[in-house]
Every structure is written in structure tokens, then in C-alpha cells.
Length: 630
Image (spheres, rainbow, N blue to C red):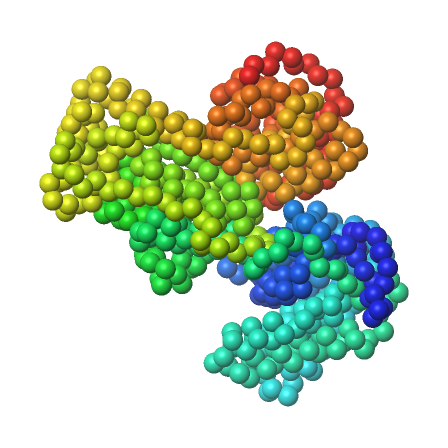
């Protein structure tokens, strides 16, 4: 385990502060399902947690090969959890390929649970092993729990008359039962879930329940090897409230639906499926009773254009995409900017360019979000830091989109989208209403009449008597709304659209320091899903007395009005990003500060240890830049 054993409870279970478990197996072994069920029961048990599902994009890579390995990591603890953990304390390897891919991450002394039944000569060859790692000493540095899960699960479900192939599908559930016993989890939520999932096949439900119970009984009765025991992780001391487990994409969906209620407007969501954004559509499709209409379009262009049409009609238009889908939506974003209509775009980033690595996370759409359109086409860009924060960012996006009549991009990513955490469900009554004022007075109306403070144009529903009007992608006259090719008018309209978006900064909270001082030797500036890793690394460094602070930017365009002054108070600015250095270039360009990049472009999130090491290296290096501007 990653923390020392403190004591034992009355049942003889060793009490730990935190544990990281990684489930790994073939794509067909149900590792995501096992991980999610363990997550649900862990949330019910009262631990704080963070998860990291990691799986290949291929629908079915060759079984038993390293290309098809799927993993799910969960970090749970009796204290606050900010990341899914750097290294797994427990690795569940369902076959040789899973062991080969993940063994390098397991620290010496870590516990490895192996399905020995899958370590056949054929599977060893598929995984690229020349010798059996169970026999050649490869696993000597680790604690091992070697179990022929395949054999045991077939025996457990034999009374239900399943074939061998169907019986083996319950391997993950059998292993889940064993882990439930090892970590004192209640099987009831999973049993109820199995009954519901297989309501039309009660024989399959009962077989899976039998497998789950058999794994649990194995833990109770087997003589475990030295160094392997039953464990207990006390409840985390979380603020009182009604919690549930939530992923980033679920939170985006619920936030959008909630925003519709807060604005007292229907929500229209036009989307085209693409990984990892697709589950936003799945979640919203279940929220029709909250006034949400979902539309699966024939492509990305139709999806965003349908949302623009909805906004023109006077309701909340929204869409979502990932990777190349963001590029396809680019022209329509320009149309929404030109027509000055409210629009919400969720960009769940993934590794690119092109199709890239669809199931791997990255933060490389920042430039595209801020600048990536033809013409001078500014819009608002937001970035949630955690899965739970996606809920509030979706609401914030709708608020800004309506108030300023502008598209708003919410930059999430695959790490946030699929990751989960306990989330305190807010009271609807405590959420601020989103004011909406449609133009109804025909006197002096034209479609580009603006609010003098926000520069937002009037929002007039088509069909409102006396407010017949025309909008479109061709430039309009500032004073009349008619089509205009006048050079001076185009400059004025371009500047006005830019000023309107920049003016949003006055409506944003001041940038705060997450941890540390507001001036000092170093600040680590992050955005999006790097929050937990950066925060934990800075926290560790500060415990050793290092002068380092953490600033996390959630409003990427416009930037918070005090950010330049804040960053100017530090001798060094370090910007870790899951891209080739995009925010660091943006900060350099805007503030002329000598910020240092730290990029990672592997499709994987930052580890706390690598960030902490970079902080120490940078602080120890001589400071050669002192011409900072603020």
C-alpha cells in the first residue's frame, strides 16, 4: 500500500490511509465495469476517490495482445483525494498482456493479483513473453496472489448451465468479489446493479451474483500468502451533504440541463457521436423531463448548425465534440460569432492531431479554442478543473453566452470526461438564476442594437410582431443591421465583437492562488485536468519548505483581469500542460513574462512525482531572467 499501516481494527483488518488499485485485462474482460462498480461501492463506503479509466480506441484489438489491454485505476482514501494516483499499490492482471503493460508502474512490494488460468503458452506468446513471468523470477520484487480465476469462476457458475465462454465472462465479477473482501466493501450495491442490468436474463444475473459471492468467499476462506491481509480505509471527513459519484461528462450534461431551468428556457443539444464526448449526449438523452431536446445529427457540421438554429429561435443551443470534430465545427462557430447568438460548445479534448489517439487525454485544443477560426473571431473559453466542476462550468457557459450573446467553449478533456469523483449535489434553490430578456419592443429595433454596457445585441425571437429581421454570416452595418461591405464599418464591427468578448473579463471572478503565497519564488500555473496533480505536487514541495504557489486558470479567454499582476509577483512561472506548450505561449504573448513550459504529450495525465521533481529542479537552477513585465 502507498501509506504505512497505522493499526488494526477489531476485525483484524489493517487500517490504511489510502490505496490505489488498477484493474487490467483484455478489452473484453470487463475491467471498466469492474472499476466502476468498485468505485460506486467505495463512494457508498464514504471514502474520497478519483478514477482514471484507460482503454484502447479499437473496438476489439486482437484478444490477449498488449494492444487490447484495458485499465481502470482508482485511488481512494480517508482524506481528500486529488488524483487517481501515480503508482498502483494493487495491480489486478487478468492475463499476461495486462501484466506486461502495467508491471512497470507497480512499485517494489506492491501487490499483484494474477489470473494464472490465463497464463497459457498461447497467451504468453501473444503478450510477447519468451518465458513465463510467474516462473522466471520477474515477480520476485512484488507480493503476489496467484489464483486460477478462470477455473474457479467456471465452477462457481456451473449450476446455471452456462457454456464455458459465457461463464468466463464473469471473471471480472469474481475478482471484484475478492477485492470487496480484501477492502471491506459491501456487495449489495453491485448485486442490485446486476439484477437491474440483467433484468431480462435473470439466469445471467444470478450467475454473476454467484461469481461475485464466490470471489468474496475465496477471500474469507483461503490461506492468503504472507504480506497479504484484509484492509480497512476509514471514511473521509467530507463536508456534510448528499453525495453521488459523477464523471465529467455526466456533470456537463446535468449542468446544461440545470442551466436551462435556471434560465427558464428549453435546452436543445445537437451532437454527433465522437469519443470521448459521446456520453454527454447519452446523459442528456435521459433528461427530456427537464426540458432537454437531443438531436443526433448526420455529422458535426449539422450538429452545431442545428444548435445555432435553436439559439436563433430563442432557446439554449448547445453541442459537443472532440478531436477532429472541433475542426469541423469551426466554420459554424464563426457563423455564431457573426450572428452574435448564444451557443455552448463542449470540447472534450483528446490526443491529436487528426484521429490521433481517440481514447487518450490531451489539452492540445487551447489554441484552436481561443484563436482557431477564420477572420478575427473571438469567443469565450472556459476550462473546468475536475469532473464535479464541469457542472458549474456548464451553467457558467450558459450564463455568459446569454448575457453577452456569444458562443462559449468549455474545454474539458478525456481525463475529466471519464474520471469520477464524489460530488456534493447542490440545492437548486441555492443556484443563481440566469436572467433572460428577449426584445419585444419594435421601437428603434434593428438586430444589432446593443446593450451599451455588455455590447451584446438584442435577442429577438423570430415571429415577434414588429421585430422581423435578418441575420447571417455576411457582415452587417453597425447602425442598421443591413448587409455592409463598408471598410470602416467592418473594422468597427470587428473591434466591437472583440471588445464585447474582452469585456467579459469584468464579469469574471479575480484569479486566486489555490495554495501558497501571492508573491514568491515560483508559481505553477495550470488549467483543466492538471489541477489535482499540480496541487498535490505543490503541496508536497511546500511541506518541505519550498516557496512555490499554485494558480489554476479556469477562464482562458478572456483571462482574469488580475492575472498579469498576480503572475508578475513571482520570480519564476512554470506552466505544466498536456500539450506542446500552448498556455505558456498565450501567457507570454499577453503578459510578456518569461514563463517556462513543462509539456507532456503521451496521452497520459501528469504524475505528481514528475511535477514535484520539475518544481525542485527549477527552483534549484540559477535565475537568469529578471526583466519581467507585469
